[in-house]
Image (tube, rainbow over all chains, first blue to last red; front, side, top):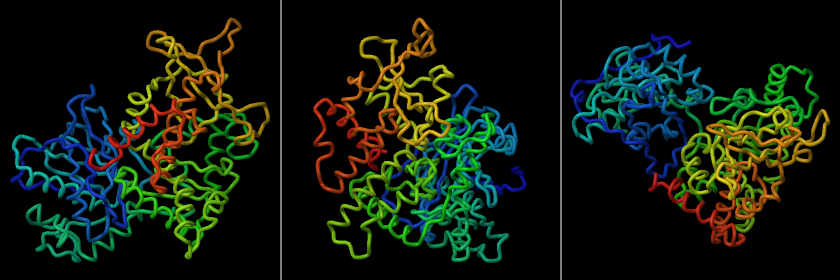
Amino acid sequence: MVGNKNYNHEAQNTLFLLTVISISGFSQEKHSTSPYVLIVQPIVLQSDEGTNPASMALPEELVDKAYEKAGVDFHFLEPLYYNNTKARDGKINLDEIVGEAQKAGMIKGQDDMVNMFFVDEVDGEQGPLGRGMMGGNLTFIALGDTLQNETEKLRNMQAFVIAHEVGHNLSLKHAVDDPNVSDTDPNIQGDGEFKDRIDPENSLNEYQIDIVHKSPLVHSRIDFLSKDIGRKAILDESFEPYFSKLQIREIAAFTQNKVPTSDVAEARNFAREKFAEAVAEFTADEKKCISFVTQKVIETLQVNDVTLMSQHPWRFIKIEDWLCGGFAHTRGTYIILSRKHIDHLCKGWSDQMTPEEEATLVERFGGLLVHEQMHSLQRTFTSKFTKLYSEYWNFKQAHVQDEQAIQVDQVSNPDAPIANWLIQDPKETDAFFWVRTLLKGDSEVPVMGKDFQDTVFYVKKKGASFAVQKDAANNLKSTTLDEIDFFKNPFQ
Amino acid sequence: MTRGLDHPNEISAYMFSDYFKSLVTGAKPFAEIAPEADYNATAFIQWIETEMKSDKL
């Protein structure tokens, strides 16, 4: 439980209390090659009705400058908007806000990324001010009034507040409380003009940099999770539900084990145990090969300006071959690779590859890595993908009423666990097709891939709800992908 | 692209993988797709330009 006493707060110099703070949105303007990444999930508080969001600004370049000497790149995910008037207005305390945000599924990660709340007031105090949890993953920022326009000073102040409060998350103390930091230099934990405090010349000293590098919030840009950390990370459901929605037959398929219970809640716990059990340690050679290919992928993406992906952290978990058929997949921001998959992909890698061999490896292995990284982006930049699916490709986003006959044989795709996209029937406005992967046959332990089949259900919209159509005998009406070639062929 | 039609998350991931391979080889993205797939592929490239490239973020 988070206690208020754990938050360090910095009431800002009144000089900037009346400066204009505009909502600048997020910006990823540069091509960063910093060796370390710190992931930030911005959470913007707004009214219960979804209006009047708190001021938010993410001056990434300036914040990165403040941490330049530590080689840390701040990577801001797409901001989330959280409807909670009392929290926005500082009418409830930080513990209560965190508790409510947790219940609402707003807090992301496994204590390995910063959740940054933008509010109007903290405990009744107006901004600009911030409170960062010492050695924790939570920060509150109130940027204050936005009435005047002093752009440079304003952005320096915004960057300072973020750099300073996240510094507390990274276990940095105020200079005045830390004998290892001079309180006469304009350090991010010291005193002085905002622009000087975030200037890399004095922003961090060597002692502070060492502390920053030890924080669990700071990761190598290409990061291999240890077995212990991976066992926790593979169970992540902070971005979307997975284990909490699994059904018994698919658990048997994924774990290649007969599920020892007919109680679905117990079966889901069994799944969690088996998934954690499957996590393995990377070997030094595996790390070398994957790092080599990933670095080449990053360079290719950077040269072609695809920065949304190149700047996204590359975080890997290794699993044993028996889990999920050894298929590569993702969870949260992690890419999960099986032992045999790594062996197969690294075949041909060596320190003495010809340029042709290298290109073949990067094309083959890199092609898989970017596929998986897309799934991580789909979770962390959701609105971009919603736009692609609905505006460019004409999918319809909808929740279809649950059907027991589908649920019992469902195969939850770990990279697309929410089956909420429908295909518009070109002949009828309120008619849609819904593609679901289901388990065939009735074996207790279905085989991954071999026992999968795609089934296309007919869905009708009635009022505001969407339901699978049924025939006279009350059976669900379905067809195959081959029968809807108007959809299939344009994606072949 | 022959797999992953069950969800647009998979479609976009497979298509991006193909797009990436063309960046590696220097080939034109989706040069060998069927004519009826041209519209979705072109739309995807437009989306990449708008949503994944730095100067458009």
